[in-house]
Amino acid sequence: MKNKILVTGGTGYIGSHTCIALHEAGYDIVVYDNLSNSSREAVNRVSTLIGQTIEFIEGDIRDVETLRQVFSTHQFFGVIHFAGLKAVGESVAKPLLYYDNNVSGTITLLEVMAEYAVKNLVFSSSATVYGNPENLPINEESPRSCTNPYGQSKIAVEHILEDLAVSDDSWNLVALRYFNPVGAHSSGQIGEDPNDIPNNLMPYISQVAVGKLEKLNVFGNDYPTIDGTGVRDFIHVTDLAQGHVAALNYLDKQTRPKESGTTKLNSVGFLPINLGTGKGTSVLELVNAFNEVTGRDIPYQFTERRAGDIASCYASADKAKTLLGWQAELSVNDMCKDTWHWQSMNPSGYKVS
Ligand code: NAD
Ligand code: UDP
Image (cartoon, rainbow, N blue to C red; front, top):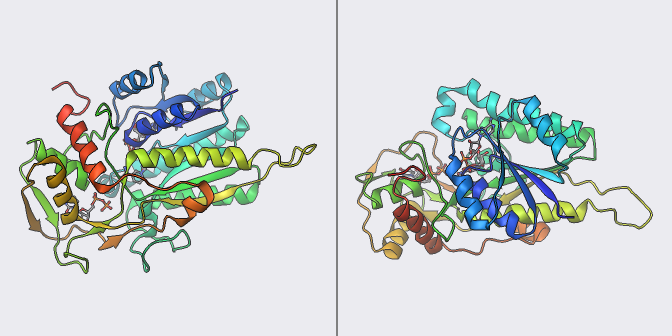
């Protein structure tokens, strides 16, 4: 029998790409999302791409009864938990919303998982938990700190998962700490679709390229980096999606009884793993790559540093390679090409233009 996975937040940017990768890897999927930051059209397009209608439930992770219904209908091997709010600025303005949605919502999900004895979880954490890192590349042992409610909500959930694993060794809880996900599916059918003016660099660049925004503001050119602009570890969303498949395969392998005649499972406990490429790229390097790959010319101007930004952030990707056998394959040029393919085919995202 195929392993069945509940994908919370599965209609969002990373979730929709991961659904395709999971299907291709032979997993059965059920998607659970309240559509607060995504579109039903994403479900339709993923269904078309995989050639099969996705089982989609519109629901909130804070809604115990709907979750119970889902867990009593399906027997899940595990949950990939993408559902969450992710805008740093909004989290500063609405901290209670962020703690309620991201932290209380995760507790509710974990309670229902416990009720139905589903103990395997892959959680969407973030490199933001490292705050301003002392050492680069950043490994999983680096201290955690953060100054905004969004990042705090990720750290809080990680602590909850750690405590849960200590309390009961039947839990297997992988926290994947994403660096900077960008790019889109190579078909151009699904991609990142920000509701408003994008906060993040790559969607901002692509909206300038398509003519929706006039020019890019580069936040600071006096950082101690190769060209003075911020450096990040951009990772193609397709690689990121494969990282989730690798994490589930790992859980599957680890939690199978090892010796014949014993039913004792091997506990994974709480396992934080970076998903990044291990390479840093500056803002200007990304702009230049985008120009080169797409033949566009992105106008930009230097402005003040953005409050809360750090100079450089890139991953040590060794743990993912050693434990999961996963590493990023796609280049910065692939990220630019696929972003542009998606944006130029869908200038208004999933909305009909
Ligand atoms: P996204 O907003 O596109 O997807 C999140 C999905 O969760 C959306 O479809 C939204 O409707 C859904 N959702 C939100 N709250 C919910 C709730 N209470 N109940 C049910 N569904 C709910 O974001 P994404 O970029 O795909 O990110 C997925 C996860 O990865 C998030 O947890 C995010 O914090 C984390 N993450 C994202 C990035 C990034 O740069 N995109 C980086 C690090 C971590
Ligand atoms: N950035 C920029 N202009 C923008 C958006 C981002 O110069 O309109 C810079 C930002 O200062 C940072 C890098 O691009 O150095 C990546 O920013 P993003 O918001 O995409 O990711 P994060 O800072 O959360 O890692």
